[in-house]
Image (tube, rainbow over all chains, first blue to last red; front, side, top):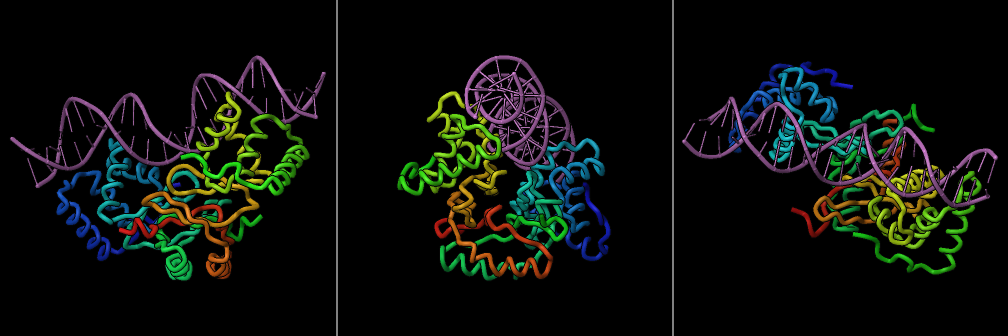
Length: 153
Length: 153
DNA sequence: GTTCTTGCAAAAGCTTTGCAGGAAG
DNA sequence: CTTCCTGCAAAGCTTTTGCAAGAAC
């Protein structure tokens, strides 16, 4: 199930994002190659929750011949630079998005639907975890599983 | 890293648990085989967070010749019966424990430490998710990732 | 005897890695 | 020209599945 909304953003914000990311990549000693540019463009152009597989397919579509391993390596690099984040969804594959658009996620174990939730919802849990266990939670890093209204058994 | 505390329980509770689970297995039309008994005994005998790999190793130790696939199949069966639960830890392998000892988990992405947390800590998030998204969270099903006091960068 | 369970081996799903050729700067 | 990136193929890790032999009841 590939992305929706790809390329539906305003040129203004997207262009800025993209340039800034290119800059970051270059400054970290990286090269700006075709697969890199394409992958960055995909991220900037959508708010969807894309798995590595989705991204591999889309990059391959826009830049034929790109290997899966290349996409995985780019994902690692972009994540190290803090450009993107990956989210464990419980159901096998992780999904990825721009970290500047970061937020927490609810994932339905019935239908796989992903619901974005603002970090505010995790504030109490966050404070309690720090106070009681000296543990700093990363609410974006793993989705909270459960059942959506349609799938409640 | 296999289990600690295995077999450290009182005979009273453990015995009761074990018999009850055997009963449940039989009543669901299942047979009581050696690997089954061993796996149940392991769960009843520890509060540790055991991965499938841990369990495969321990079952194999106590009942040599048992195949990994057998353990996986037993885990599925026990989970269907509601005897155990599995928890996605973000770091590849899931871990398992008796559902009657259920609780939520914090997992440190630095050192892998697992911290048990009472369900009460999720009450607010639970209510908010239901109210705002008609989504019923399963706080046991996926661990909350983050950094423990030792590993905060 | 019938049905469920097992061991073995193969495979599936997701991701990482080794390597040598090729491109970016 | 040096360093980084790429494609390809192989392998890693966790888990699932097909199958025929064997055990439980």
